[in-house]
Image (cartoon, rainbow, N blue to C red):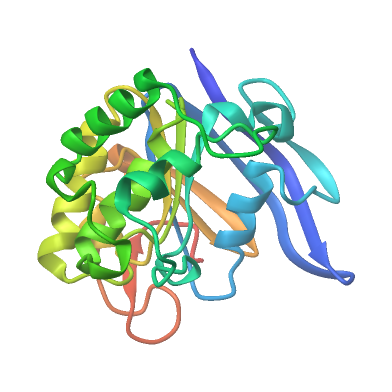
Length: 243
């Protein structure tokens, strides 16, 4: 078994208020896992713990059997769409290459091999013809692919995405999930999403998070249908965790 993420009994709190409690799950090589749950349930916080930006109060998270901070070079991260400033005057290739910039460099300098690798990634994501386009001029789907390309430039073994389809229409959403499925052949993928019934066609594991967690393999779920999974008009999974 090639274990990539090992999350055991994790608890996290902000200002002594518990946000996550007793979080347990495992991610193995080539897993494609969705984290689902209500707004404020702790999903994005869990991603930050896996990135090492936050530290658990108790329990442990190991990425490639190490502290997440020591494993960051093997992790690609796609933040929520709204957190990236797309008005910054930069083209697609420059945005991607900045992620590969040596922090000790006084001026941006890229090797020919790095530029070639960036174009190969853009081609794989079907946006290589947009390499010189300003990011502010891209459509929603094109922007999301560019953000994924930026995360892939470091050739990660684990890709984390925070609601990657939140700002795109349903047709683009389907394309992005299918794209991630193809990338999953070479890396494990974990994404935060609200679209349980849709993403369940692609993922093999689901973690339901609402302060605590419940971990499922898709093959073990009896049914996935709409209405009332959290509170209000969301998605329901017919299982026993009742989150």
